[in-house]
Length: 319
Image (cartoon, rainbow, N blue to C red):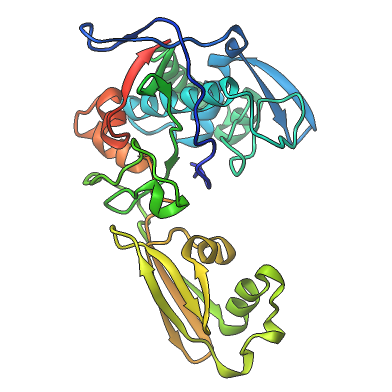
C-alpha cells in the first residue's frame, strides 16, 4: 500500500486517436504513442533503468500499491489508475528536471508509483503466496488491459491514497490547484483497519521538526515558552489547511510531512512536555481511496463504478 504524496503532473497533453467508451453509444478519441508500449523504470536498488512491457509494469505497480487480498474489482480499479498514470506521464514527455535521465519513472512511491519485480514479490509474499497473489493481480491487469481514465479527451492524473476516513478531499484544498475531476466525494465504505492513529512527541521534537523549515531553528524559536498550536484554517471536509505553531503559520501538509503523520484530518492535545496528534485516515485524501475501493467492491461495485465515483465526470476508455 502506498500513498501518492503529490498531485504530480497537472496539465495533460492533448491526445488524438480512436478509443471506445464502455457505453457503446459514446465514443471518445484517445491515442497512445508506440513508446507507451514500454516503460523505462529506474530501479533505486541497482541504479539501472529497466525497460518493461507496459502491462508487466502495471502488474508490478498494482502488486506494490494495493494488497493482493483485496477484491478483484478493487485491484482492477488500481490497475486502470496505474496504467493511466504512467501513460499520462510518458505522453507529457516526462517530469521536468527528471532526476533519472533515460527513465520514464522510478520505483520510489514518493516520486510517482511503487513498483516491485517478480523476484521482489516472491520475497514479499513467499513462494506459496507468490503463486496465489501474483496470478490474481495479473488477472486484474489482463481483464482491464488497455483501459485508461480520461476527462474531456485527456488522460487524467489519477492520484490515489490509502484511506480518506469517510470523505475524499478537493485537490485545490491540498495542492492549491483545482482540478475538475478531483472533487470531494463521500466514501461510505472506507474500511481501513487503523483509520484512527495517535502519535505522541515531545515539545522539543515538534519544534525541531517544524522550525528547521526555511532556516528557522529551534534555538531561534520560543523554545523556552512551551508550545502553542492553533488551527488557523480548515478545508470544507474538515481537514486542517493551516496550523499556527508559536505564532508561525505552517501549511498542514507540511506539518504532516515533517512529523510523519498519516493525514491532515487531525487534532492534538498538549500535556506538559508531550504533544499528542490524532489522525483519521491515511494519505492526502484526494482521488481514489484504496480502502474505500475495497469496500465498494465488497458491496458489489465493479471497477468502472469505483473509478467514476472517485474521479468526477470521467470516462473509462480503451486506448
